Image (tube, rainbow, N blue to C red; front, side, top):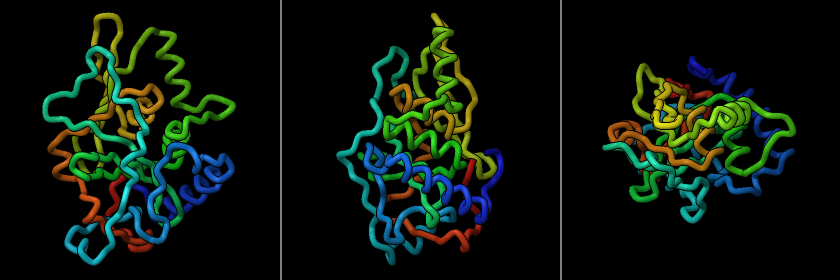
Length: 226
């Protein structure tokens, strides 16, 4: 989505996605489900100043949801950090993908649309729809064209919108394609290639697990979304 999510649309998409998620029983797959007792990331603003008043949010560090990748050219760019994707959805949280750095215990939250969230959750759980979704179609097309996905990147934040890149290899050519981070992340998970976030972006937008603060959707001030 190119525009910001409103609180109403966030609730609607989250409710639909939550119902779909339960039907598919994907919550028992490889997705890390965060604390459902009111502590997580809502579709709102994260306030570090109030962090001391909130219990720490915990991620299951032992859960690995993406292969770091060994393809030639998949080495991390300078000043980029490899991140592990986690997904969180629900009426109290909205749709958010968390890019997690276990070494620093930092997450970069990216709010996304319901369709992208469904695709990411299915891929994390290694499940598929009977018919191809958008990212399944892209995978098939790239495969037929002998194009290899090397990595996904989240590069910067412009006007409250994250900017990403998908790095591809076609023969001897390395291609960098402008992409929404949600699409880049979904493709990376499905192809088991690494996801990198620029160190500057982690420093600017990253939040330590011990400093997360939660706002309910009706308290949304200025959500960061795709």
